[in-house]
Image (cartoon, rainbow, N blue to C red; front, side, top):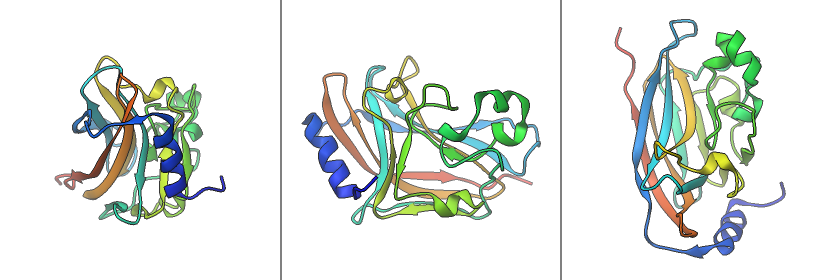
Length: 198
């Protein structure tokens, strides 16, 4: 995709009327019981919104608001997984714990079924069982009309699954759309997960 983040965000904002009012209500972290089948603990990170018909369709970092998510120990990566949930086979998640508890990023979808998540200038080191996901000119995103972008009944949009034996700290920004069709941004969202207790 031959486009930098600034151009991409500009085009996205032009598609809908802008609004200073944010539907963002918070970040929610849920531990997923991995039964000790992979190293460390597994966490899912959600964005909570005001209404079930609100959306998040871009998570990003730019030069003014860098994206920087890092762990004190490597993120677990399955050889059969991938950077986004487009690489996560629904069939394999039922058969293989390595894939089920892989670390990945997404917009809403937890596997490859009906998944339109894409990436822009992000993720190479993360895919190599690294300790960080960073960018000053990148994003992961889906089409605004994608069903996975909507908050749904629980008013949450899934953004990532992280498996690690370490502590996680980070910051990232999002862009979304209200049920009335107005865009919103939430900048510098803080992510903090303490290291598992021994």
